Image 1: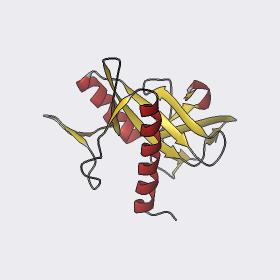
Image 2: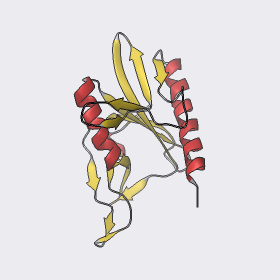
Image 3: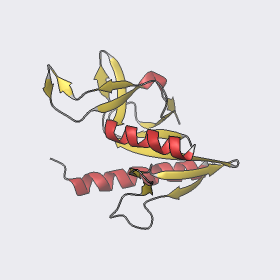
Image 4: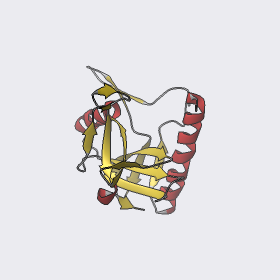
Length: 154
């Protein structure tokens, strides 16, 4: 079983890989974790404290967020490859987009099982919501999944 600290380390390494890639493509990157790795970056609002995506990016006078998800495998759903994120984060990011007016792009950094590489989409891309149940039994937290066919390989 992989512990939380190891998962956090893998995630941070994946974020650094993506940030270096984006910088090489002319994107300026502000990693929101840079000041304190022990706390997640939050957007404080009147009604809630919302988790922010990993990177704030700037290119051609545009500002946007990027959330990086480092993955070791794809999900095979009815013969189609998918990858995704926790529905709870997805909902918070929807609120962040609504409040800031900025787009959020997801970059999935797939590392072990093919296809390997960086795959991206706008968070608003068509997705599949899974409630976390198999045969009526709750086995995992609800997830938002994006089809490999809807992603763009970087």
